Image 1 (cartoon, rainbow, N blue to C red):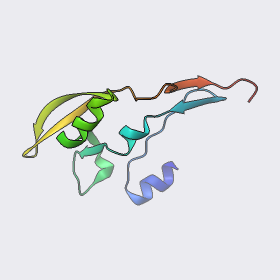
Image 2 (image 1 turned 90 degrees about the vertical axis):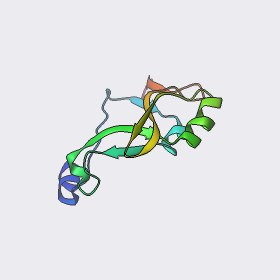
Image 3 (image 1 turned 60 degrees about the vertical axis):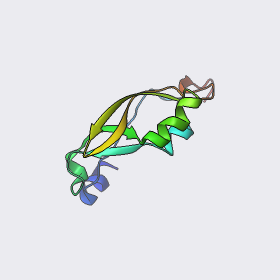
Image 4 (image 1 turned 45 degrees about the vertical axis):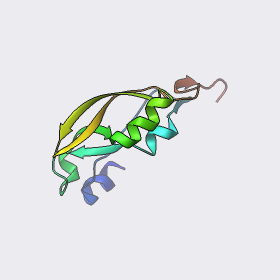
Length: 99
């Protein structure tokens, strides 16, 4: 995966816990977040932060799925994500027994 990401010039996010574990993620946040790249034409240079638009934040705030701080960047208002909480129980890391 690392070699492929380097050859394509895209960032690679590696999340590791321990064997026999799973990570639950908030689907409503995954489908909404955007990336503020250091250089949009060169994603391999990394990113500054993850964010949602004011409209997306308004919807996610109803369910208290995330915490974010209001900022202005690149001439627009954004909500920089600081915490992902999720609306459903079961998010986070869970050890799977007998796996």
